[in-house]
Image (cartoon, rainbow, N blue to C red):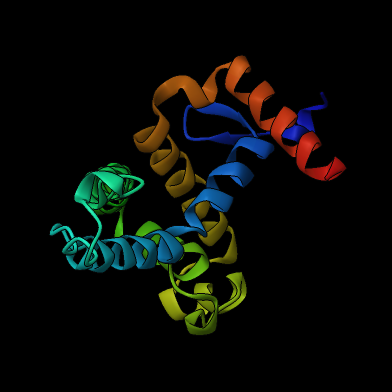
Length: 174
């Protein structure tokens, strides 16, 4: 691993790949919000009442209990909703801790839908009235803060970085 694979972010020396992984995860922000909304609406529409038995047939001849299936489906949806809500809340709370420049850089680069992103790093620098170097510094510091908020200090550990490398290799072979 060369020194160019690591960058200094505040007091940390972080592998560039770790910041890339956090950025990739943050790009899923809008998708996760939409998925949460979809699941919330779907959860409300699951019928809990069993349909009446067919004429001439007994209820015992049905292949399974539709109410039980509905409850199982609701539990699966609810579990996914809890995970999504926890992730979204963690990101939103971590954003509150960032400086205004860091927050806007992260928002413009990763959190807005691609169609709503208006700026490159140069454009953000002009808009925010800071240097391009400050935009990159704000991005790196914001990404590290969000990564630490989402995953804890495990992202700095070699084992987490190895997992990231393994994941990328397995995606490359697919």
